[in-house]
Amino acid sequence: MGYFENITKYGHEQVVMCHDKNTGLRAVIAIHSTILGPSLGGCRMWPFKTEEEAVEDALRLSRGMTYKNAAAGLNIGGGKAVIIGDPNSEKNEALFRAFGQFVESLGGRYITAEDVGTSEKEMEEIKMETEYVTGLSKTDGGAGDPSPYTALGTFEGIKASVKYKMNRDNLKGIRVAVQGIGHVGYCLCEMLHNSGAELIVSDIFKDKVDTVVKKFKAKAVNINEIYKAEAEVFAPCALGGVLNTNTIEKMKFQIVAGAANNQLEDEEKHSKMLDKKSILYAPDFIINAGGVINVYFEAINEYNEGKVTRKVKNIYNTLMKVYETSREKAITTGRAANSLAEKRIDLIGNIHKRYV
Image (tube, rainbow, N blue to C red; front, side, top):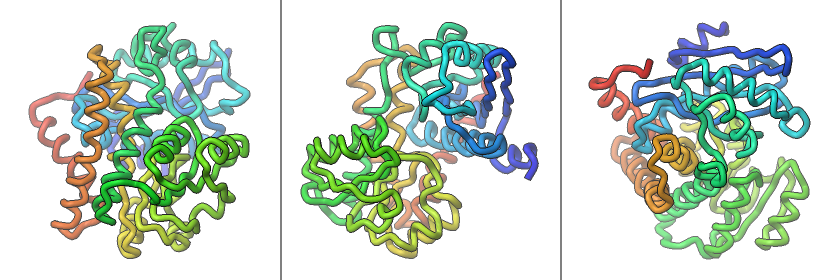
């Protein structure tokens, strides 16, 4: 499928290919929608195997941000950026300042933030070239790492899912299989452990697994065995596409509720497959909205920890609304979540113009 066919399929407004000869920067900035306001979404750095893979990731992630921001009740559109490169060996100040110049050239249509492979440090380097960046360190006047808020929203979503599916008001003794122990996954493991849940964990980095096993009494399993784990809840917190025909067939979970983006390899097909197996699926863009809620209030200069925490905890209620809509209309939870976001976009779109 050609680039314009993909852009048409996902409904994007603008896709920018960024290249800087001096730094070797190769990046994609995808602006999906500015109906609710300027597009906001993180900048991911990853060693994509092909340029096509990088573009596809940017397109899917930015569309997800539109829906995530809309469903969370934020007055902001959806965008995403990806930088092609190994975050463990190819980061440098010049690269991110060059990226910042491309963000600046868009005149505020896209606001960037940290994501997989980037951190507060890189946001500060981007800030040297543009004001359209969030996720800055607290010492630099920002709100700091949004990962704990992504984890908090996911934690609240797991509680809502357990309440809806199992009629349990607490997580004591609930077995949760967490895939991916990055910043978000680690914070989530800590919250789950403190709530009395039992942890099963996997990650491609053994040292991260060892830390969680030691600190939170978790059980470690192979990265390929996590899908067959004996647990009530599966919490994918790594990269997307992990819910596919092969993995879903192995699952015996009652609930899938995690922080990863684009968890479903095929949104329609695999949402139905989970539904057929009576596995309750917490739509990813609903449950993982805590991080963007945090950076949103930083972006509009209204940051207050109490306000952010209350907004993030409301993910519990939003998920409950999605589950009830799914039951009442006999549709998948994914469709119910999409309907919630689309309804708000259509409503506001009738009174707002795109951010130009």
